[in-house]
Length: 428
Ligand code: DLL
Image (cartoon, rainbow, N blue to C red; front, side):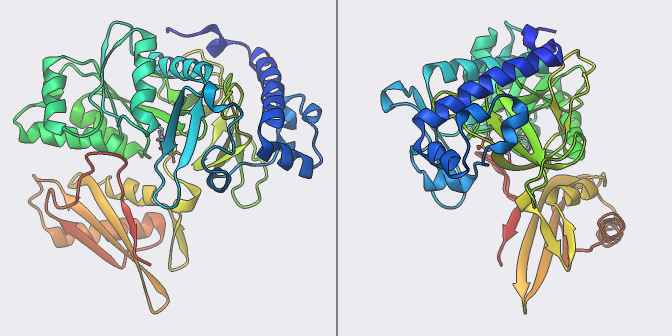
């Protein structure tokens, strides 16, 4: 295992480092960010009140609305001259969230991404085709510099140009592909159309992230591309990709690089911290960010934490893979369910391809859910019978049935070539 010693350090050592770095972060934010100074003053908190990570709960939460109301640079802790790079998180509505990095922040970012790659099993000298979008999105450049930091070769193709991606994977014999989970499947499909058997290519690992990926979806990816699928997690507000990553040894949860990011899981309704192992909303505090220190950021992502030492020897906390966000919750005639739960049920059926969409409508004050799924090209059975079986399964597992369930022909559902896949269309 190639790693930095802190990854396997005793928990007490990690704690001490976190305490020290948290004190420094609070001081930096209090002195240099008017927004945080006003928040702490209003709550009657002095920076000295925060001595250890046990005091973190005294700090206020930061939300995406705070990023928006402080747009563009109200949360920055340094002058423009010390900012080396700006990124922005997409966001479908309203203003994007602008994020900034000092030179040191960029070094830390490359280091944590290099750690992610090492944990994924990538070795210096290997070749990585980077299919994350370059530009304001953090995926492309975030992975790019981490790949170089590790000492691997990066192929900076970015998103799109799918046929070209397939050709390059073949011609440059990349060992690793980094892209969203949905895009890796699209790439496999494109290779097939080009008459190339993607399982014959040397690529042996796909490092996917930026989107939720359920276990059945991961199995599809691993099977179709004949690869090991490794989950990488992160968000712009905290740094970008590289907050946490699975290890290839265990593939059991994502190691959070706790010397840079302090995790908590809270009840999304009450804001109260939840004990280890209970599912709730992930909240992150940066411990080393200079340009944009963030207290207790409410990620909206649902997960659980465990502090048990991993099989790989790492001692840093692990989070479960994120299959949904608190605000993804669908309420269908009084029954709560997440799109990922629907995905898990329908992908149990071999006849169903990993493409689907959910449309929500409101008629006469009643919510309607329509589920459209694609059949596998080689399915030649009775579609009506398949539909009935899927309906029954959804009803047994999730206690609801969609108002309309349609099974469509292969390639009917739009593929996402660039950016994040959209599966839920809310017309209400
Ligand atoms: O998506 C950063 C990233 C790029 C992560 C490339 C991994 C790989 P944002 O655009 O700010 O940043 O979106 C962050 O995407 O809060 C999650 O809801 C979701 N997300 C990111 N990684 C995962 C993952 C990048 N592995 C938001 N699993 C986050 C599930 C993920 N959701």
